[in-house]
Length: 261
Image (tube, rainbow, N blue to C red; front, side):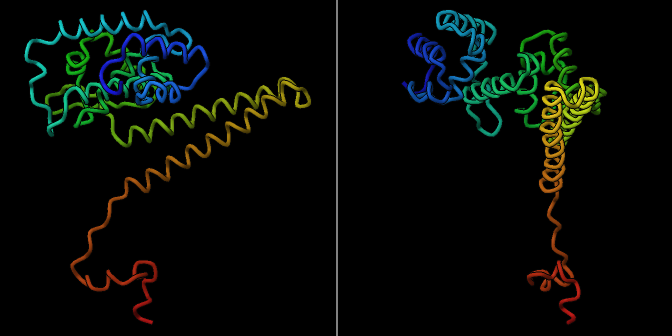
């Protein structure tokens, strides 16, 4: 049935689908569920190679029980900003976390990244993250250290001298550039290996192919990040009050002397 929590029978179908090598999208189609629901279910319960329906069902029941114990009575009644559906936001945050985990993050950095990304301010303090995620300060600190190493967050001091962790458009740009630099370093080392192994050997040929492929990826990643930043971060210039009528003429910005021809 679409909507609602997964049943034990649905989890068994997911396990069978994984055993048969089906893609998440196909499993979801057979269940009549969104692909994100299946992806989240599998990733938070061991991944595609370790997923077991019975263990996943019990783990979900334990998480639900803990959540009910942790939330004080009436907590869900607190109003959400912009009239949002609190349950829908929570479900989406879980989905976003799962996507981050599927990209290679471990659970805690993924949870911190999701919390920061979904906050309207795009920033939270350590104490706010601790309260929001119900985890220890040490867990938050380790997660932030990892995200900083990937250039995915940055720190600033607010007016109360508190350290805030920030996710914004420039952070994603910096992360993409850091990724391009890391790939370029792999290229450099691979080409050193070509010299060590001898250019006419099969192993050296393999390394050279790796280097050429990754060199292309790194170059285009950096170029795409630069282009996206230039296009998406450019703010439209407000029309000048003087000569406003000329501003509407096509080509006026490209051929400054055209109106004098």
